[in-house]
Length: 101
Image 1 (tube, rainbow, N blue to C red):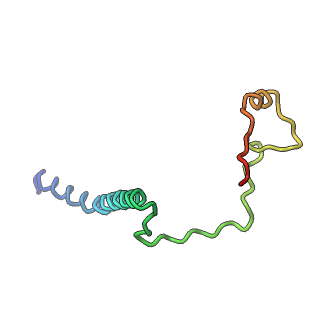
Image 2 (image 1 turned 180 degrees about the vertical axis):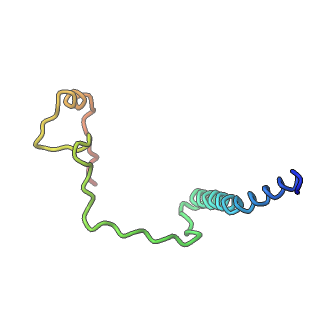
Image 3 (image 1 turned 30 degrees about the vertical axis):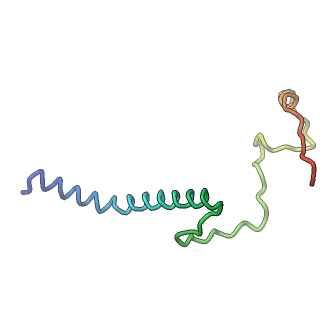
């Protein structure tokens, strides 16, 4: 039978083997972020990616449909604003568009 010290040492080794890849991944991500920040700050350009990135899935063929029905941000021209919406709209400052160059 093993004593408590040797069992603790075994648990520590097993935990180290399981957590080491996670720990290295965390530090590598932190390091790459700091390098990118420093490069951007010093040169004004982002550095090239360090590792290959998985390709993005293709975009849907049609544009996104927008908010679902009943969503507060869905605005329809054929539906008048409620009294509360008119009150809130009156409190907004007028829109000012910059002059086109």
